[in-house]
Length: 309
Image (cartoon, rainbow, N blue to C red; front, side, top):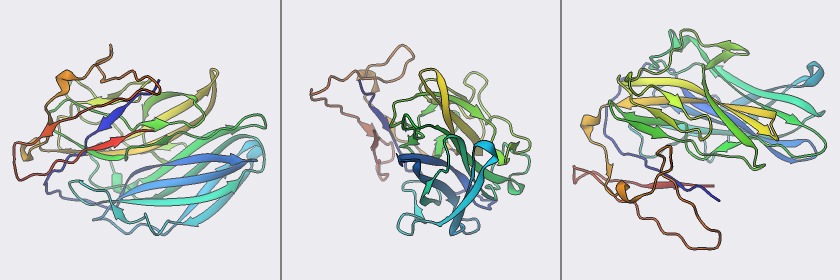
């Protein structure tokens, strides 16, 4: 059975005051290619008002028996530097990819760090003084393949003030491992959290939270501005921990007075017991879904994007 999920990207005209430097979020993934060789991928998001993104990324590897090594790679010149479409201000995506052969089996961690975080972040005491530390861990052995999950939906997102809202980054694990989700504090260096972190400001009746099974984030934001959180996804295989991935995300709360598109036919779509929109599909059978959205301002454009495995 496959779960079909739609995400709506909303086009809003809004003016922001930036307190940049630049880093807004990202993650590191590892794809097993065979024989202990992995494709390591770093995706990072940059506020265009801030300083330029470094053209090279240095991955740090830590393994069993205190093994350590680094690998430096340039960013992909075709994808890197492109703007994410339909965002309220400039957000660029950067992609760094390289292959690496791990010298032994066991528990490996790959990390990357750069300074500094976006100065507009409100739920850190000194975001301009904090680096963004991303890392992922994986357990390898000679008997099976193990890759980290990856995400289908971008990490830099925005939402309207005082409005119930949900988001799911849609992870996909090629090995079919079980995933457990939690909210963690962002890291500034190895094993060191950013100072002064608090969860994003919320309506007391709908606090910032994540479903540990589905990964859906739910929240009613009660303050305008930029907020950061680190989403930790742990992998389990037959009940045994086999890795985790940390995804830093920046949430941008905007004024709904500018107008947001709205779905007009949600009442016809089935929901599961947790009130999530859900479909049970039969393999080999056709399936049709119509989504209808509109805007009170006839001069605005509405764009729909579908994300799926």
